[in-house]
Length: 274
Image 1 (cartoon, rainbow, N blue to C red):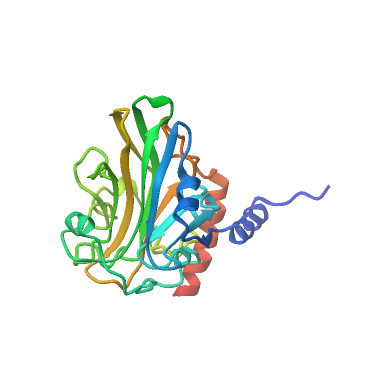
Image 2 (cartoon, rainbow, N blue to C red):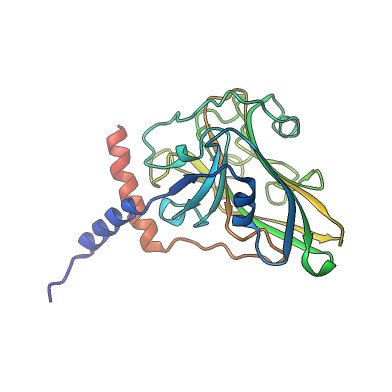
């Protein structure tokens, strides 16, 4: 039997990774979006989606594009499909011409634009209180050149009106200025060299939100994302399928070989951009 060299196997893996990169499908139904992320122990009601056509969707094969979560839903401050790779532009985006959101303006510390949100009420199954968990990745085209320059795109995860999407061990919201290549850089993935097959110039590692000790009443929930400073460049938040749950959901990570193949593919793409 013919033996393939390691270089050949890696090159083949890179090609395979290219063909299995991030898949995004537009989805504007709030019920479909909510059903995709709600997992064990949770019942939802009064679902509301706010956003322009194409600003949200479902995604799969996230691991093939470097994300720490493989499938779920995505909300965008532009168009969800703009996150699809390769990273052949450092300024991709769609200005939806939509308004921002007052709660996100507070988090960003500047006017917001093109807000997209998913809201619903939820209760814990069995009529008891409990703990709530959720996994997400935040990414943006504002990285790296617009960090701390007035374009602090932001993501909020509100439970009973209080933002729970905070940088770990801080009270700071998840935003371009608060997680990047300098600030909290251990949580950040720099994709400006097109290492991963997604258009995003940078994104966070997968983060888990936990909200502990909620009572047995009906609670309100909202995911929301918006541009800040202007509505030009897009940001995205990817939410892991079925991880909105009363039990923590593990975060699947890409295998080392898959990452290696994606890295080689990214180097090829980087040369094309030069």
